[in-house]
Amino acid sequence: MEGGGGGGGAHYNPKTVEEVFRDFKGRRAAILRALTTDVEEFFKQCNPEKDNLCLYGFPNEVWEVNLPAEEVPPELPEPALGINFARDGMQEKEWISLVAVHSDAWLLAVSFYFCSRSGFDKADRKRLFNMINEVPTVFEVVTGSAKKQTDEQQPSSVNKNGNRSKSNSKLRDLDVKSSRKKIEVDEEEDEGVEEGDDEEEEHGETLCGACGENYASEFWICCDMCEKWFHGKCVKITPARAEHIKHYKCPSCSNKRARP
Image (tube, rainbow, N blue to C red; front, side, top):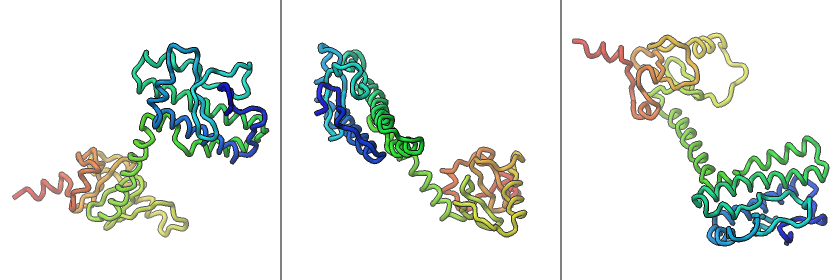
């Protein structure tokens, strides 16, 4: 092991972006195991009666609670010292989250230590950071926010598909643009659009039938009777409610229908 909590002697030196990222993933997996699967054992080992303790993650995905390295400065950056002292002074979830935050900082410090030692240039450092940034942080995983972010992203995709299939409701958001009789979904700007002036007038100069303001990024809905567009908030229609409306009639058209 990378003994005494020091971790990674001079003999261990990942020299490429891929090798450093592999090292990062191994250490990250080890720390995640300590803070999730093995959390009871980790909690037990962080005895407040002991001296300054650190949580180490090793490239082989093994974690260890140990004293800091004796040599100064240590071979690698040190994790947060004394994590055991706060164990019984705060709620367990909050304590675990605090350890997770400091572990994220340590993982980055170790990776960029190898960057400096191996002489990575700007492009390599940026590529490594982008690779690291593609995976959730330890804090996000431990607190469940990584899953929450994934769940929050999913409905937006579903809503777009729903808008695409329900042409009668004529829903409009950032990704939905309309013609007079149907809605079209533009996921990318097409080059060489015919009648560019007409499209600009249609989408850039469309005014809300209620407040008279231009279309921006908010939710819009179109009346199937007069074919005027309205801000959802102006006619008190939410995207969720609009999903269940097959033929929408604005307040003005509804009042006309109600007259004898």
